[in-house]
Amino acid sequence: MPKSNELGDTLCPVARSTAIVGDRWTILILRELFMGCCRFDDLQAQTGATAQMLAARLKRLQADGLIERRVYSRRPVRHEYLLTRMGREFYPVLLAFRAWGEKWCKSAGEPLAVRMMHRKCGRELSLDGACPACHEVVARSDMDGRPTPEYLDERRRRRESFRAQPRRAES
Image 1 (cartoon, helix red, strand yellow):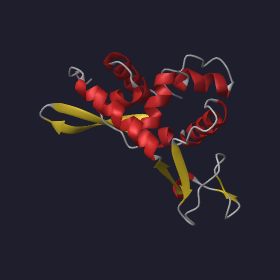
Image 2 (tube, one colour):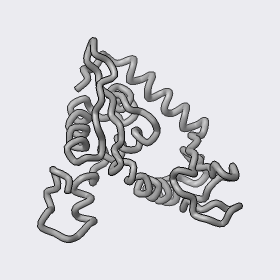
Image 3 (tube, helix red, strand yellow):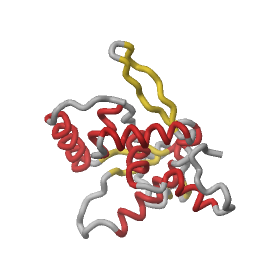
C-alpha cells in the first residue's frame, strides 16, 4: 500500500485512490510523464506548477510508488522522473479523463488535443479506446498518441513562455 495513503481505514478504493492522485497537479504530472516529459523544467513548463508545488508532488508520487527518480546529470546533479509499473497502470484512468474532458469540457468545434491511433491498423480510436475498423477495445501497448498541430503549438508556446521567465531551481 502506498506510504502517503491517509485513508487506510476504509475499504473504498475510490477514497484510497483519490488520496494519492486526487488533485490537479498530480494528474497533470502523470499526463506529462505519459507524454514523455521526464525532467523537472519540462514538467514545470507544461503543468504550470510552481517549483515548490512540483517538487512536493514528485516526492509524494515517488513515496507512493508511482514514479522513480533517476540521475541523468552529475554536474550539476539533475534528475529525471520515470513511471513505475504502478504509475504506468494509471493510463486507463488518464484515458477516461481525456474522454470525459473531450465530451464535457470543450466548446463545440474545438479540436482534439491528441488523436489516439491503433498501431495495428492505423485507424483513429474512438474516445473509449475502441477501434472502428477492428471492432475491439485496444490495449495501451497497441495505441499511439499523436498530439494535434494545435496542441503541439500550445505546448510550444507554454515551453517558450516558461523559458523566458527567470530560471528556477530544480528539486
